[in-house]
Length: 300
Image 1 (cartoon, rainbow, N blue to C red):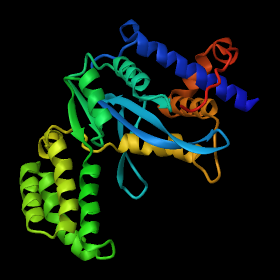
Image 2: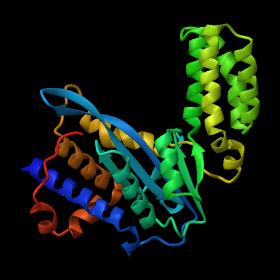
Image 3: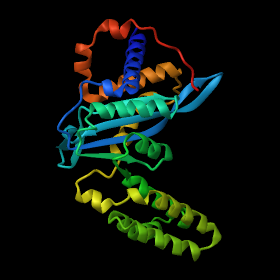
Image 4: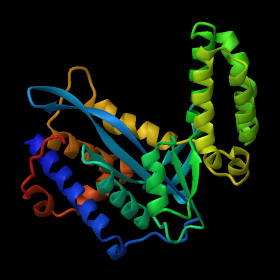
C-alpha cells in the first residue's frame, strides 16, 4: 500500500511539473521582491532494472531558491552553516535533457526569475548545462562551481606527482588556487601553458587538458567579483541534494529499481525536502493524487 501511495503521489507530482514546463507563462503563483535567484543542476546515476540485469541511468536534478530562502545557522560548536527552505526541486530520470530544462525553467518562474534583480546559474561546467543556461536564462550570470575548479587542479597534481605525494601536490596546487580565488584565470592559463611546453609528453596531456577546461570556462570564473557581490560560488546545494534525495534512498547496497518506481520516489523525496511536505499533504486532494493510474515505462 505504501509503495502504491508513493508511486501515485510521485507520478502526479512529476506530471504536474511537466505541465508547468509546457505552459510556464500560465503559472499564476510567482514570488515577488526577489533580490538574487540561484539555479543549480547536476546529474546522478541510479541503478535500474533493464532487461535481465541492472543498468545505471542518469537522473537530472535541479534546485531553485532565492535569497529569502537562505537561513544562516550555527552548529552546537558554533560552526556556521546554511539551510535552504522553500526551495523548488525538479527531476528527470532517463528522459534526456529537454523535459528537464522545461521543468527547471517553470520552477524558476515560480521562484520569481522574472522579478529577480540578479539570477545566478551555478554548474560544474557540463556543456548541456551551459546550453540550458543560454536557452532559458540568457541574462543570468553563470558561475563555474568553485569546488569543481579546484578539484581539477588536484586531479592534475595527482597525475603529475602521484596521489601519495601529498606535500608536492599541495605545493603545486596552492599558488594556482590562490590565483583562481582572486579571479586571475588568465594568469593560471598562462602558467599552465608554460608548464606544458616545458614538460615531458606524458605530463603535457594532463596540463593541456586542465588548461582547456579553464579556457572553456574562464568567462564563468571571476570569483573575486562574485564574492564582492556576496554571491555563492559553490554548487553545494545541488551536490548535497543529490546525496539526500537520490543516493541515501536509491543507491543503497544491492538496490535496483524499476524506472517508474525510482522516478516516483525521487519526486516524492523532492517534495519532502522542499520543506513544505506538511503543507502539501494537508492541502492536497487525495483523489487528485491517489486515483490516477501510474504510467509504466522502462529506462531509455
